[in-house]
Amino acid sequence: MLRHEDIIFRDEVLVVINKPAGLLVHPSWIDKDETQTAMKLLRDLIGQWVYPVHRLDKPTSGILVFALSSEIAKALTAAFTERSVSKEYIAVVRGHTCEAETIDYPLRELWDKMTDRESSRDKPAQPAITCYERLAIAELPIAVRPHLSARYSLLRVRPQTGRSRQIRRHLKHIFHQIIGDHKHGDNAHNRMFAEHLDCHRLLLHASMISFAHPVSGEQMSLHAPLPDDFMAILQRVFGITDFC
Image (cartoon, rainbow, N blue to C red):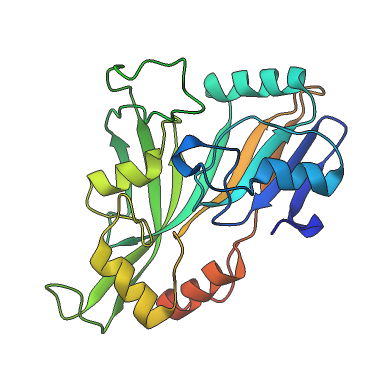
C-alpha cells in the first residue's frame, strides 16, 4: 500500500511521502481495528524508525512529513504549532463557491481517546481560519435532490490554522461540503459520485507543504501529485486533463 515511488523527499533527518487515501498516519482509538498505518509501512519500507510530525486524516491523500529522530520531530512539531509551515490542499466540493473566501470560524478540538488521553475534552472552541480560491466550476446533468442538475467547484485551500479536520468542517460550515466526506459531507452528492462516477474516496488532497529545513534552515517547498483516481474525477467532472 506504500511504495518507494511514494517517497517525495528523503535526507538524513527527514522523509516525506505522498500518502494514499484510506491509510491512517498512526494507530488511533477511533479506528482501533486498523493494523496498517503510514508510520508502520514507511518504517518497514526504509528499514528505519520514523516519527510523524503532523496529522493527515485517514481518507485524505497527500503530503505527510516524518522525522528520523525524536529531536527532529520535536523541532518540526514546534514549527507546525507556531504556524511557520504553509500547506495547500486540492478539494472538490458541492455547489458553486465564491471565487475566493476566508472562513474565520472557531472550532472545538476533536478528541482521540488513544492519542489525546492527557488532553481536556472541555476546551472552548479555538480560532480557526481557512482560505480558498476557486479553480474551476462544473454542472452535471444529473439530478441530485432537489435539483435537476448538480454543481461542483474545484478549490485550492490554504488552512491558516491546524484544527482537527479543519478544512472538512469549515467547508461544511459554508454549505460546500467536500465530495466523499462521510462524516461532514452531503450523502446525496456522495452517493451520486459513487453511482455515476465510480468515486468512493474523499476528494481532498494535501498537495503542497513549505517549511524551513530543521537542520540547514533552507526553505523547502514540496509537492505531491494528485493520485490517478483523483485526476480521473477532474477529467470527467471539470474536463481537466493536466493539473499541477
